[in-house]
Length: 62
Image (cartoon, rainbow, N blue to C red):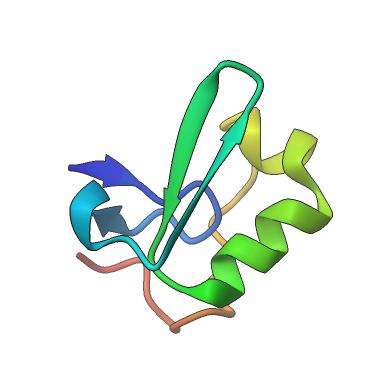
């Protein structure tokens, strides 16, 4: 299990809606919306310091 860097939801890598390699890490996403949000500001979301953005699913729940 991993955590979507945008909404902070838990994601099973094999069931992720999308993934991207950034820097030397692979990030997994719960939705295409989170994936697109990450791609707009990868520095912000890869730092781990961004607050959860629940625009994708209203979530943050796992």
